[in-house]
Image (cartoon, rainbow, N blue to C red; front, side):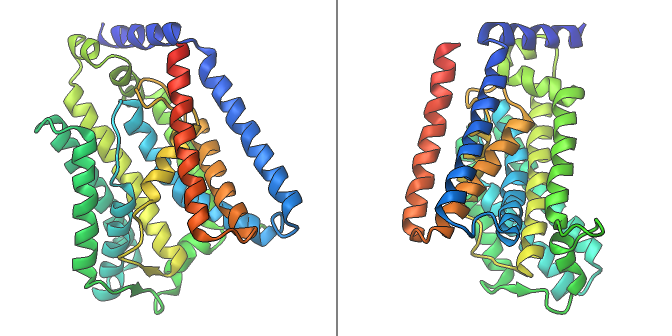
Length: 332
C-alpha cells in the first residue's frame, strides 16, 4: 500500500509537470555540449588533442562525482553547499591515514569515503532532527570541514610521493591499450550505479516522492527523516570518493583546495535538468551537465582567458542554469 501511494505521488507529479520536460532538457543540454565542443575545436587547434580531452574527462570525473551525490540531495528539494570542502577533508583524512600513519592504501581510501559519508550523515541529522534549513546546515558543514582540513593537516599539503600505487587509483588505466584514466572509468561506473539507485530502488522512489510532495509522503507512512538522512549520507559518500580521486590525481592532499567546487557541481545538476524545487531529475542529465562545465572551463583555459574572467563566465552560467530551472517550473 505504501509503495503504491508513493508511485501515485510521483506519477501525479510527472503528469502535472509534463513527462517530456526531462527529455527535452537533456536534449537541450546535450546540444549545448555539442555546440561548445565545436566552437572550441574551431577556436583552438589544441582543444581536440587527446591529452586535452583526457584532461577534460579527468576534471569531469571529480566535478561529476560531486554532482552525482548532489543530484539526490537536490531532488529532495534540499541543497548541499559543503561538497567542496568535505571533498578536501576526505582527501586530508586519506593522506593522514596513508602517509602519516603509514597504513595500507585501502584503509586510507575507505577512511576518506567514510569521512564524506559521516559529514553527509551529520548534515542529514541537523536538517531532520534539529530542523535546520539545508542551506544553513550545509553552509555550517562547509565551514567546519574547511577548518578541520586545515587543522588536521596543519595547513600543509600531504604528499603521496612514497606511495606510487595511490596515484594509479586515478591516473592508472585498467583497460589494456586504451589510455583512459581510472578516475574517468570510476565516474561512469558510479553514474550507472547512481542511475540504478534513482530509478530502480526504493531509495530512489522515496527520493523522488519526498521532493515531489514531502507532506503527502509522510502521510503515506514513510519515515521521511530516515530517508533524508540516508540520502545525505549517500551524497556524502560520493563526495568522499571524489576527495580520494582528487588526492590521487594531484598526488597530494591540498587542505586549502575545494571551496568553489560545490557551485560547479550544483550548476552541473541544474543544467542537466534537475529541478531546484525538487521531485525531478536524472543522472544522465547530471553527467551531461558536468561535461558542459568541464568543457567550458577547459575551453576558456585553452583560449588563454584569464582566470578571473573564467570565474565570471562560470558565474553567468550558474545564473543561466537557475533561470532555466525557473522557466521550466513556470511552464509546468
